[in-house]
Amino acid sequence: MNKYSKHLNKWEIIEQPQSKKYKKMSCVYAIVNEASEKIYIGSTRNLFKRIPKHKYMLNKNRHDNAHLQASYNKYGKGVFKYYVVKECSIDNLVKVEQKYMDLFECCDRQVGYNIMPDAINRTHSKETIELIKRKRKLQPPTMLGKKHSKKTKRQISESKIGGTSWNKGKKMSKEHCQKLSDAHKGQVITEEMKKKISETLKGRPAHNKGTKDSEETKLKKSMAQKKRWAKKRSGNGGK
Image (cartoon, rainbow, N blue to C red):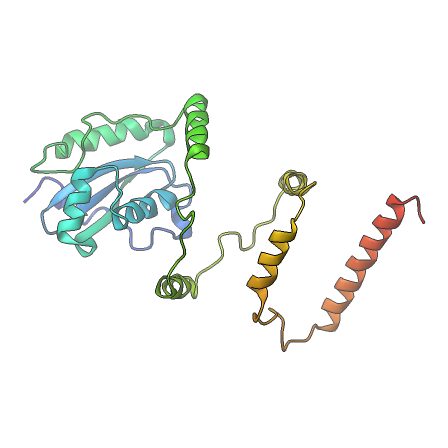
């Protein structure tokens, strides 16, 4: 039995990583392979984002940790469980992570998946962030010149059924609205673009086909239209 086995009952298993309670939770976490009894210890400032990222990269066979990825490919995702080891402040993350890394000796290939023996602060400097941005701008889009198959489109559609939009209930700040407005000012739609848009929309039913606006919606639209016309008149000297 491994050193961490007796701790499993004390740790909180992460069954729904994108639960609200994990938003901005800073903690040390563990990824445990129940088949081989190997463990990975990590830390994060935001568990809500970190665990889904691990899962996504492993499913895509693109995880940074080659040892963990190879084991995932061998055993399958069903044997991997995710745990909250200890919730702690951001300032103590590295210290607590190192404590558990040393305790479980998870850098030993026979025991764990960690590659680096020392826990480090993974927050990028402003200079590093700028370099990453420049590099990404030079990289071509991954889907450039490619199209999803009908099967893939159907799978994407089915995966989103019942899901909640990432921005549901959120409002954009005035600054963000202004940035979006400035970014779109002066953009010219070419005849070629108009033609492509037209061809894309052909045969597609209107989103509101068969529905009727309520009296309240009609009133809101009327008021919004009046405001737009008022702005146009004021911009043309009230003419």
